[in-house]
Image (tube, rainbow, N blue to C red):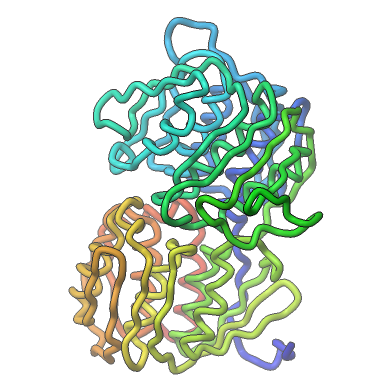
Length: 443
């Protein structure tokens, strides 16, 4: 570990993890009694999850990144004839995790959203619980919200879920499983397990709140305390004991997804960027941004709870990003300035995000003059020192597109975005942080 103090740098703190914040809120809301969550991410998606949990009966109070949650003691019920409406807005995580959770409830629940949410799939989750007494009534497009979910509680036993499109189907079922009548054995099917590290975050949150889960590989339990290292369809299963979530005081660790833009900015600009508040041993899949940037030639050094990214000459490389799709826009922009070609593979599920991110990246980076081609499951970028200029780019109402495209400002472009406010979905303080970086770079 180097002495990070020897470098001139901008110092920023990563916001609380969005993925972790969702899961901690849900576990706290299902527990009996009042829990306290510190460093909770203050963003639109997290407000959405909190609002939906409140509609299900959980108490929510707090400010300045700290939330007190009074749980429903595992009882999710709607005794009325009309369904409880859960407006998930544009939060795919809220939608899929809560669709799993309410399948363990009793009564009718209506999940609806807005924008592309009504095109994002839920069918694999519905199929997983169709034998548990839960019915999904698709109100517009088959397999997508809005959907009326009629639940009679989870019976438990064997459930099989496909992870070809999203890991959130499995996470939603796992979060619901402690509410089942008996032990639930969730088996993974399909041909691949996209974004599987997020399941590790789900298990970590459940463990923090007292849920008991055993992981099996080829019908054998993992040795005591061994962490989830991969998910293999047909071989991996999760055995969840019925029981009560317990109250807890917890801390939401810093977000590597948000930190990715700041670390990339340090490599692309002329001034180093230090990002604090990051757990070096985090289970977040997007922690791999450090390894990806290093593989591309960036100098990224680690401290006790921080990383320092210094201006670097980048080189193209081949990267399988199936487990870290949220990083693809960041890496794609970095690849535009790298020497040689970068090929990003196993990312077809990016077409099902807030935007079709593969098509959006091809379109917007193409406007800037870069050579980029999107395939069905991959993205190729030929690094090219395109002269900077004034350019108007579309965010496609996608927070990750907005933040990644803004990094072009550090390479000589003056970027105007059509919807910069969309970053409030995950990182409301992003523009303030970027302004500090731009000022240090003389922009």
